[in-house]
Image (cartoon, one colour):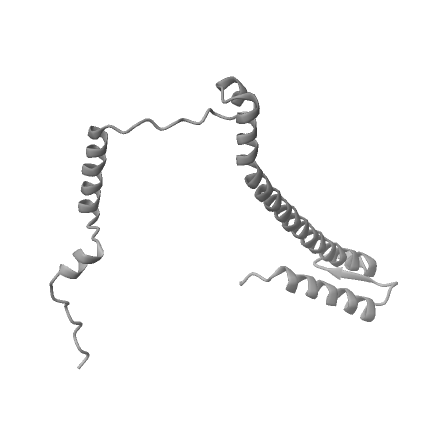
Length: 154
């Protein structure tokens, strides 16, 4: 049996409520699945379903609003963070103790690269290109080969 959407279930419950209120006399008892129900009890069950679905919709709207607010705040924090780090560094000095007070690590300054390190990086990069069969624009133009044509359906 396919699942019905919350919107559909809410509409169905609302229609059942209006139908029960219109067609069921108030003073009678109704035997449903071996259990007696009054008209008000039947309406209360379906009204609870409508209220529960309304609560879900309100909670989703509140969640969406909270997420939007958090994202806007995160953008503001992200824009302000480098400025505050720079200000703290200028004002109090770039020591590990000062940065630790703010929960930051002291930024590392890159040292000069040695010739051996540059050569190792170049060799590693070439090995990666070869393993991944990565080619530049001119290398791709030099590739000659044939393309296997698909068989015709005749």
